[in-house]
Image (cartoon, rainbow, N blue to C red; front, side, top):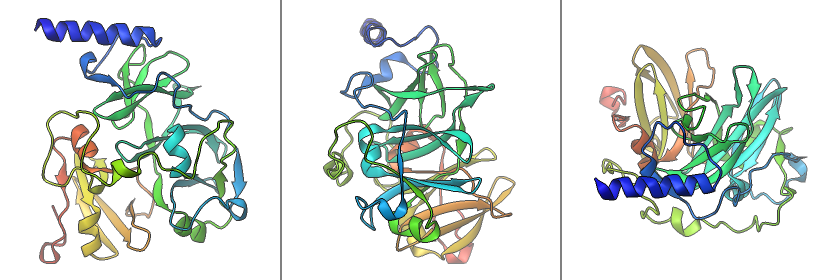
Length: 309
């Protein structure tokens, strides 16, 4: 108990030196860890610049992008840029949007940054919780868990961020469907080698760099999954299972019927409602999805049972 108390005091001291507000918190403070860089050591992009698709010569066809469309405007955010910045404060289709990416968890997530009528902007804290990036807002210095989708320390503890649909796909696939898309430019205002992937060896191994609590060995730690939390049910769809199944199929979560689709050439998984509207879901490494959804179900392809979990 004394060691735990001492650990908490050390964490509080470290957080206070970084300027964060821990007057309130919803997660154990001794489970907040430094990822290495200091506050804003990984610089978020606050004034993003974009180029048309035909000028995005720095992209290869198989490069991965996070992408979305809103009110007739399409944008793509290359992972090779997000690896170095993790957060983009942007607008699309006339509304604010927050793009976040955690290379350690493989999670790309888009949020509505407007809370009770006020827009918040976000930066990278340099801190982690269960290996996932802790964002912070510039207005209150509250820390936010990306995967948990809510404030976890400071005045906005417990406040939820609304998750928005986002596609994790290849540049080839996105451009084919959205030839007029805009692409986040490498002209970020920072000097980074966007041709180099600093997480290449990490992605190819099963090792984790930071603790996540009790692991779940139902899948390999870095197996890719599409995770969704809908109608009180959390379910993970492993890409390895989607590879074996049909291109599209219907599934049921609670009382909701959904349509899953998987494109093998681009390894793109998407989920829609019965009206064809894209639903917010998260492409993630298995260990990260399971760490935040310990009761998650796992989809297993079974032709005789319609692929139900």
